[in-house]
Length: 148
Image (cartoon, rainbow, N blue to C red; front, side, top):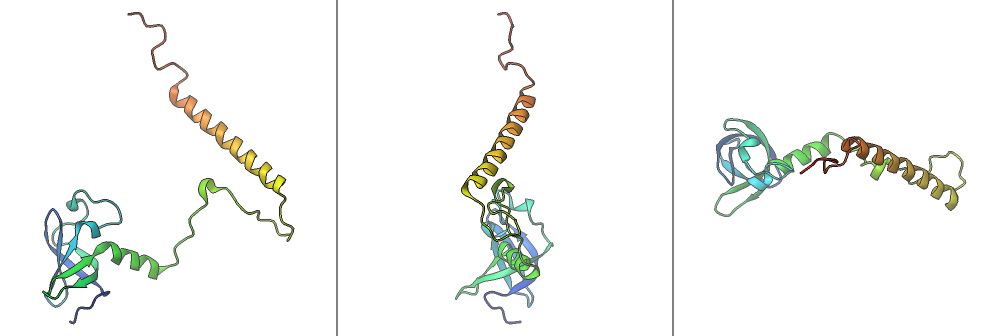
């Protein structure tokens, strides 16, 4: 099988080092997944993400003139996610509706928008105060009337 940059393949993890994992690809060729290409998050310990003899999906990033194959598990996951379905649109911060969902074509006035924003803000501040009060338990952290 001819390997090409950009291909997504399945391979078997044959070895793990501090800096990456070696993956045997179809056709007997071996490539390496650098620790920075294992997962979309920071990877401190690679063994938390892969084990020897595990089958993993990898994307070929580069094939060097010396024949070394650079692989990425992270990019293979990204490609799989985007090809399977359209990614959902991220929610607005605080789930605040920035545009009204009214059916009529009349735009909301600035005063209406400010009023809704202030109401939402007040509700969130009161929720925050209530949660903070509950965490503190209603007493001082210094211990109140302790004698020394």
